[in-house]
Image (cartoon, rainbow, N blue to C red; front, side, top):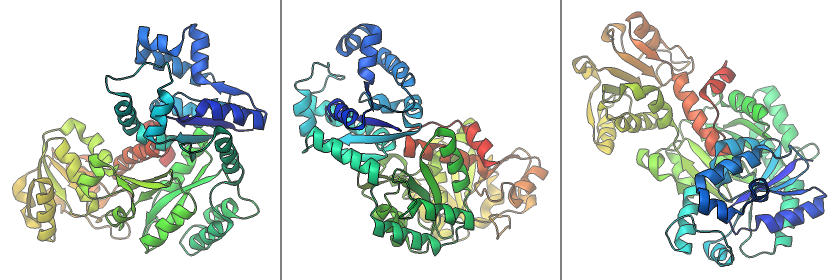
Length: 463
């Protein structure tokens, strides 16, 4: 039987509920804190006091790595989810249940705990601060969520067993999901797989869905990449295409199917904001666009990983003179990334008003499209759709490019665009849009599952 792994903050009931689950399933109960205490011969409070939190986290990581691969109920420490190495171990071939509780309930439970504080704050302030700090990691850790604020350990254990046995979507929701996907442009084999997952007869209640939401979305390579990574990391998930011109419908289907999350592409990166319960402050809110939605514990949280995908390949060019072509949602993420690298940025767009509006949003310069030749940039970033199949035109003429420039085309289908081909002929340094896709996908995977996938692994699975 698959492991049942319990994550969550201290005081959410992991140990008590875990012991009941073990009794009801006939599997052994394992507490990672107990493993640490047995191996070190010291209590957790003593380790914190004598060696500090960092040393404890090392002992905890060793404990997690030693867990049996199956047939066990595992309770983890409250901070275990912060380490991607732990999440790689805990998520493999397991059902991970996040236990939650409100601050007052946790505070009342912890007031009786001998564990020393981790900060100089009051107990309530420490709980609030740490929960906020760990929110992203907790969301990433969860296959299912159970709120233990106003329930007994026995009732919580019963609910967990019900989730493991039946999942969340009702039969009606799964039928509606099948109808939605049949109406889209999903390849035949992929549609058949979805029908098996959602079928009343053959579905596995523990299999969760993710996908790329867009119109169009069929060009996305996300399903091929993510499904390969699921296999590699032993995750019971399936990634598909949520292609529909109605964002309302996509979000309703996603919530109804208890989807883990969505990668959001054109034309929904701005419109999706009104469908979210929370938007990440650093990145998504400033950019005004979301490309990643994480559904967790009944809520929908929006993030932007596009800017990270733009930023990482350009770190060596910090402080350069840059021109950004385009003024849409992708351009906003690129502008945020370029300015984070302290670049002297000018935005160009064929509709000058849009360039002016985006420049005003970020406090940088803008000019009309024809001004490119007078700028003589070190870096050119194309954030227009020109070059993406079927419109495979280049946004610039070859004679406008010069040796010594770096040209980064955010279009990744095809990888070598007409702009990059021209730049290569002129002796420019080129960066394919695939590099952006790799880095933003790496960040997305971390948001969805808490696992840090090496860039090389993603690159290998795109071939």
